[in-house]
Amino acid sequence: MARNNRADLRLDAPKGLRTGNLVGLGRNGGHSRDRFGRFTEAIARGMGTPWFLLGLTLFAVAWISWNTLAPVAWRFDSVALGFIALTLVLSMQASYAAPMILLAQNRQDDRDRVQFEQDRQRAERTLADTEYLAREVVALRIAIKDMASKDFIRAELRALLEHLDERTDPDSTKESRPTV
Image 1 (tube, rainbow, N blue to C red):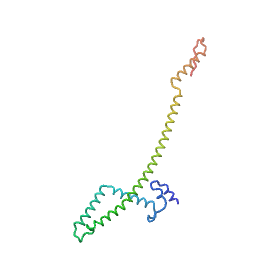
Image 2 (image 1 turned 90 degrees about the horizontal axis):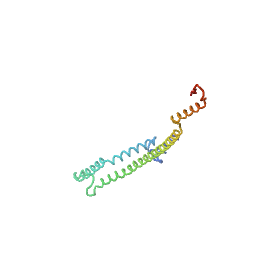
Image 3 (image 1 turned 30 degrees about the horizontal axis):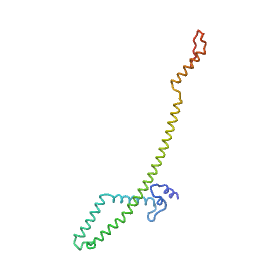
Image 4 (image 1 turned 90 degrees about the vertical axis):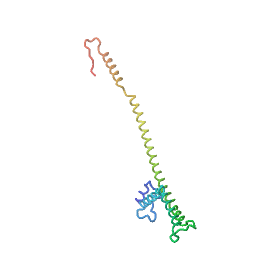
């Protein structure tokens, strides 16, 4: 049961494939599915290269050349019937290629969806952090605005000293000044 819960937390697989085991995938269904998915992605990636197209072209040219130029006893596909075996081989290759390409595309869509969700969450956190920092900067500006400056404090101390000087007796011969 705990194993299925861990599988439900995986975000790199489609939701329907996260739980349950598929028939024929062995004991460790999740790893087998992932291995199969990576395998099909590698094949689909390989089929999308110029080298694959060049190889397929060379294969078709070699097939047609062999079945046209080789002695009749060695030929295995008939020119008169329009190379039916070559058509079947290429059709079979295409029938396997299309689902593999779709599977690879679906897996990429799932990865993109997970990446998009992570980017959205990161953007939300960044926005929240930015708003918090903006509020803090405003609070600091307000606090600094209300803070007394050095010149203000000096002026207040001078005014206090003058006030204290006035309170002392102006007729006294001794000038006394309170210590601050």
